[in-house]
Image (cartoon, rainbow, N blue to C red):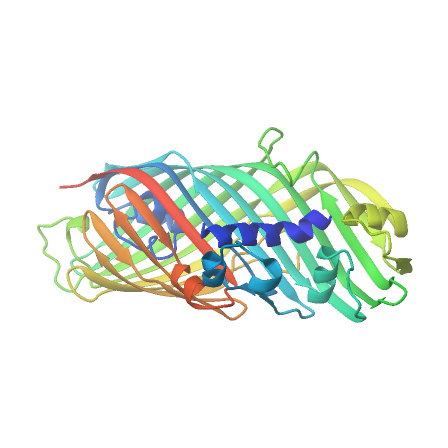
Length: 440
């Protein structure tokens, strides 16, 4: 189980050291985002600027924690590379949180059926990790093998963590519902067939304790649940043993056209204001024959022989009961709200809110990072540039940039803030390659 506690830290350090999203920050609201915009709001599949848009391969990642901040600019300048002790600041508290969101968009495309309806096919591979409400000092000492001369107390209430990986095959359909001279309303839905690679999860309603350094003694009280789906290995996630599930996205987009020409079709007109709302990742995946172990943590134990294996440490020192059962892991359901305003012919400013609709205290669900993003952009047929500023959960402010140049899209919602601050708590990046076929 220790790997569950440290996997995010290792991932965060690797991504930050190489500068390697809430997916596609800034890009998803571009009117030339194509299939990327459909994964954000399925109503974007209709009335677009494309005859067809073919995604070859795209990927995004968002990773971070409110436990530590990283001085990326100093680390990049150092000849010795990244030094964990020198290049991070720690912010331990009773309820620290860690998170990871990766999204790989595989071969996907969209095309028009009629002037008022369109369809899209989307393939994706995704992985989420959330660790919520863990005591920061306990986390640090587990990672350091209790190599400390200081006593400490800890109290983690409603501790929960879920690592989940799955693939998706989605069919999106969108239609123009209202087409008036000044008002257009579009609706869309994406139905998904899910293939779950597996999940690892922990939870505790209350885990308290005290550590005495002089005697290397750990006194704990409470219970701890730890489970994995059948044959799941978080060190080597693969898609060999899959479990099926179903999911859906649903969305609507309203456009206000102040001076629409009746002779022009929807995609040829320039709206003044666009408002979108979508509910994404409804659904779940069920896994049979999952092993769930409940540990009775009421004991006083020695940490002198603790050697990096938390699961073995638990087995050797605490009583437990194990059951085999069917578990249902919920998708990271989120509400997305967006407003896009045209300042001039090629200049826009957008606001986007992504809000989690899942219970973060549940051991069998993931959640997005609650985020509000403001993003001015320059947008043309072959080129767009974005400069998003995001206000992210746990007090992090991120400033980034990105561009679309024909078939290539590159960006990060945090690249500039990562370089300017000495305590970055989140980092993200996205990269995409497609074949856009524009309408005339």
